[in-house]
Length: 168
Image 1 (spheres, rainbow, N blue to C red):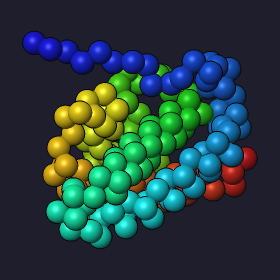
Image 2: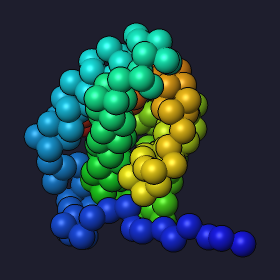
Image 3: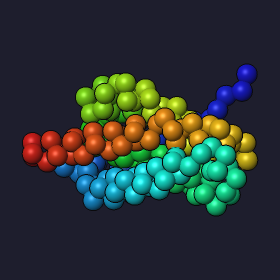
Image 4: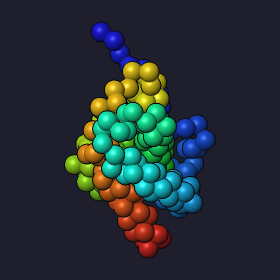
């Protein structure tokens, strides 16, 4: 049985002190920069999604741009989720998708959205590590069906940030 090694979600530059300080230690600018990045990438990805499957696959520049835009947007989701989990003072998740579950339990994102994004994070891993084996149909299907999930995630994080700021 093959097992996929898991790496800690939170990068080493997130000291434990931030968890003790709570949301006040959260770097709002970093989160806003990532949210802005996702927003810009969604614009590009929607342009790619408006192409036919065949047109996207036959244009290597568009296809590879979509791969990069998708991969980096999903990485931004991972980074934001890690930031929020850290700010909540929660135990470090063992796997990337676990952070979304923590956000759902905290009421930051609906559990249905967290569940919808977990497969997207698996796609991110494929785009990063198994890029030679990425099936164009999978990418096209994601562009057709899942971009709204990324946008909903951003809106929920923005809402959380606003509520956190008002509470402090």
